Image 1 (cartoon, protein in one colour):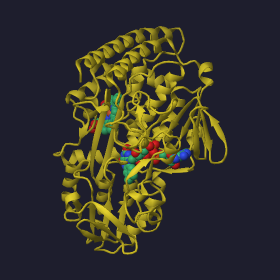
Image 2 (cartoon, protein in one colour; image 1 turned 120 degrees about the horizontal axis):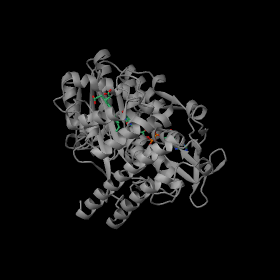
Image 3 (cartoon, rainbow over the protein chains, first blue to last red; image 1 turned 90 degrees about the horizontal axis):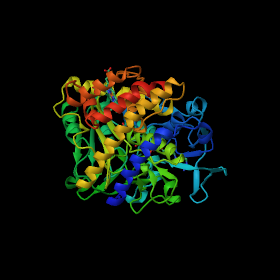
Image 4 (cartoon, each protein chain N blue to C red; image 1 turned 90 degrees about the vertical axis):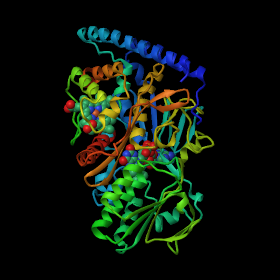
Length: 430
Length: 119
Ligand SMILES: Cc1cc2nc3c(=O)[nH]c(=O)nc-3n(C[C@H](O)[C@H](O)[C@H](O)COP(=O)(O)OP(=O)(O)OC[C@H]3O[C@@H](n4cnc5c(N)ncnc54)[C@H](O)[C@@H]3O)c2cc1C
């Protein structure tokens, strides 16, 4: 873990945090004062859009620019619900009209191609150069295409989708599920840790089985997993036995779960226990921070971005904050909820930093709901604190839906999952 | 955790709680004078995550209850009951256990008053 803070720094951090809190009493939001400051946010996903929205909400006088190339953002959360036939693509698509129209954020439809941390500028693909006092980088993930022999971006776009960035990839996987024959096999191949949305592949297996059970009941889902265990394993396994008996098979590393290579022409994958053929093959490759984080030199040897957990400021470049999937956030998983929680805390920290105050100690939270069947929802929650080793779970808080939860509780969690989605997307995109 | 750190953490909590008390007096004095109420920065930061489930400003759409418009006393009592398990919940108990009673007080104070007005 490289979010290690020395014990001395940590005490200093706490001490200044306290001093900062008392300073804050008398340093109110000065409108004229704040108007001078420009904050630029790269990426309009869960992390970036949350930061932009909350910067304006907490201090309307700030100048906030959000750089995002896509006019329509399709959320990964609930994209598995689309595969299950429970949502449509338009229902999981957001846009930036309210952020720019109602909330006064300057939304620039372009991509950032370079960052100059010394001059404090961002260069856009279209040629514009934006100056900033503070920069927030939330570019999400990129894939390590060469990590699996035979796999490539081209293959993901033709025959073996990852569907781990929602949009055209989700549609391709859905079309393949619709086209396959009853009695066919769907392979889902998740990566080793860490990766975006740890329960995502297993929710996917559940909702693909939900679709198959209704339309192609002789079919099977096989998960080839390089991991010994996975997120909410007990809850998923129990749910699969109850709702989809015999349909979902999980193979860990000892049972041939590790991929050696894939082959698009024969629609098969090679493992140490032989080849597996399938009609639908969903490869979720290993991941790294979005490419702009590399271009800007914000990553370390792990391929992710080290940050100071108090403010999510990069430990490599000053005045640049990295949040969401791209950053190293200790015990927090790479989730949309976590990215949004980090985005809001970062907004509050930036406002204090611009006023010359220390950020107050953040409160970070995550909850990932997963749907196993229509009336069958489970969740994992975490509330976090800072420690000398970075962000850690608060002992006694958070945790899983109880393994012996009643049918009523599971049905309630399924409804709460739906309400969570509607509320978080309004909280972020308006 | 080394005991020195523990001490610091406790000290931090006590300090920020006394700040909160001071802030309360300050805020009402300011409010009377027609100024902008001052916000304890910790109350605000602790409350930021709630809207991820309860919707912006605690106005929920769907079955998660809204807390917008609820008094600080109501929110504080609810969070403490979720924390102790006295009130049965699917997920709120797991969240409420992450906050000290002092922090719950700051959250309730922020969401029940300031959070509503500064909308
Ligand atoms: C199948 C699936 C299901 C999931 N379900 C859940 C769930 O139920 N709950 C949950 O909390 N999380 C879930 N997640 C995880 C969640 O989607 C991610 O953790 C979240 O999107 C991370 O937010 P982010 O801001 O880091 O990145 P993203 O949301 O990916 O946003 C990054 C944005 O940055 C833009 N961008 C990239 N580079 C540039 C550049 N150079 N210039 C400008 N813009 C740029 C991209 O276009 C993109 O819009 C799921 C993920 C998957 C794949």
